Image (cartoon, rainbow, N blue to C red; front, side, top):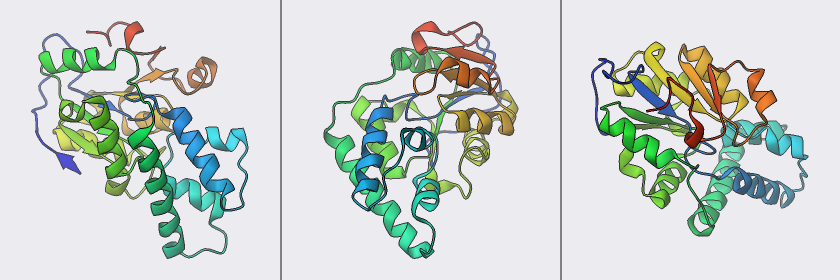
Length: 230
């Protein structure tokens, strides 16, 4: 767990949340299609042809959980760990060279939160190396006070562990946090953590996310509803 700064639990005078916790892929960086491409290539090379529904279901899940579902039968934990490393290394190599962009408006929102003194953390199913590379490619590595990745948790989303640990790293109760998510499993994790949730329609259709009952819904950070916007 990366933790570069701890902040008290006092809420900002101009913002109703004590901290904001961000998912990474599909919330900060637009990598959803790249993930699908890597999953498809990786699985086909090993004799498994995933459906589009199976690819969609990878969003928000740790690689370990996906690979256990697709390849777990008859494999040892050591063999699964090797598969995880191979998959994440492939994604890291493609992420390093593929064209990537930030989710629209995220940099301005992060800068506004920083000016307002609102602490920020990443809570992601990505590995540490891929989380760091993604943020570095966007020039946003130093915009976060803490990062919690797949390596820091025992249970992946929809379990709330990642957001409970992200809130703890900032010294803020999860009930005083806003979580920004793009995935069904992530919205469920936010709710289970006791946080309020803003869902972005960058990866799932609006109607799918609405069924998960997030407090707010937006296309991206350019269209944030009140009181989420700064």
